[in-house]
Length: 218
Image (cartoon, rainbow, N blue to C red; front, side, top):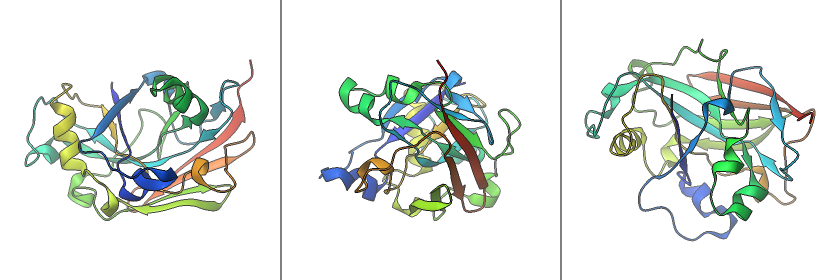
């Protein structure tokens, strides 16, 4: 499977931290399958990360094999929607100049609700194009992010079509659609995930993805 992610895809998040421009087309990057964990699994904080953020995201689950599908037909390729958490080692993201290491550590892609491969995506027949959904991140019960997919720069149709122009999309592939504003790195003071934390991602109509956090034992 492929885990295709989209950076800076909410208007408010794209401009927090002093940025002044939003992307002109979807900014794609990837995570590896070894990053994938399910609801209730532990997020392991690697020693290389001095600041680790959780990012609440709507995940699109691909349901059939497509290549260069149009935006008009894009929802035909979608099986449904899940919650996701694009965990990110911020110090590495900025020092490396690209995002593979910062976002690719094992356990850095929780998806749910439900265990890995036992997910039950909420279908397009219930959530349509995924617009107008509240997206919340809670850390130890306190709300950090509280956004809505109506603030997406590029919606689900555009993302599926755009990604399919690059990669052949196959059943089980995931597209993480980006995160709203409020991530810990851009707060004052900054808030990083810590050993013993519990992070939750909740999306209207889908449910709650909950993961404990611990320091990686090396």
